[in-house]
Image (cartoon, rainbow, N blue to C red; front, side, top):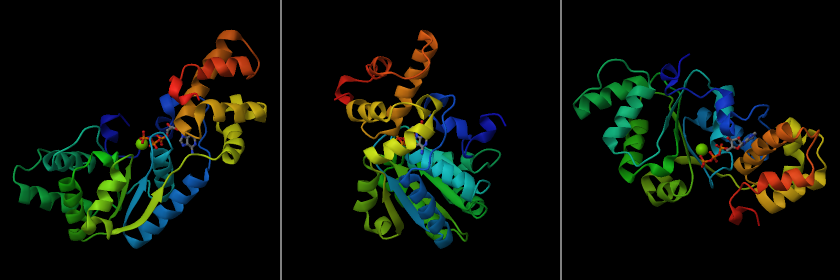
Length: 260
Ligand SMILES: Nc1ncnc2c1ncn2[C@@H]1O[C@H](COP(=O)(O)OP(=O)(O)OP(=O)(O)O)[C@@H](O)[C@H]1O
Ligand SMILES: [Mg+2]
């Protein structure tokens, strides 16, 4: 399926990985397992759910992985990279829901069309929800309240998403589950990183711990980025496996404040 046709659908699994890192595997972190259970419960309850936490902690990957299993055909996804108006939000929904033709020009008609299409959708993911204004959240609440369907809304977002939802009593009271994704603990890093990528499979556990303490700090995107550099380093130097020198070279590519 071409990218344009996939608009609004869950991305392919490979696209969830940082820079499509070849060889990377999805690993079942505690957070991912909990996201799956919480989304399952939210779908059963036809509820709203909020998965939040700092950048790079694995929110989008956990939500997409869970929904590929729980509702692959009935999930639609919208995502913003700048603050949308409610008009932008309506248009984004129109395209994500696969509606054909020209979007209606009158708001009442637009809302009727969107509500009709949402009756066919079970799960709507709003990723990067920290970009949504109060008005946009209100609009989604209106659609959710008003839709004669079994709609579940998953809000996923970084800094600001939680605060915005919490600050609106009408929304806050409708959110069924709140889940914060924290950083990976060192114990979890030791368990999941060897399964994450073949370069770590036989690596010295002390090197993995060193990398986490000095550079990755339990942040999954940092782990993926370091792994990407390591893969090229191994290829260019012809070394057989990870050693401390190569590892330090790989994480020297991260900004200095991260490598403390
Ligand atoms: N459970 C996992 N298994 C394997 N890789 C993971 C996992 N979780 C996260 N990653 C890696 O970390 C990267 C960042 O994760 P993700 O994009 O989900 O973070 P995020 O919390 O949504 O960040 P942002 O707030 O910036 O959108 C992914 O692209 C992937 O490479
Ligand atoms: Mg994300």
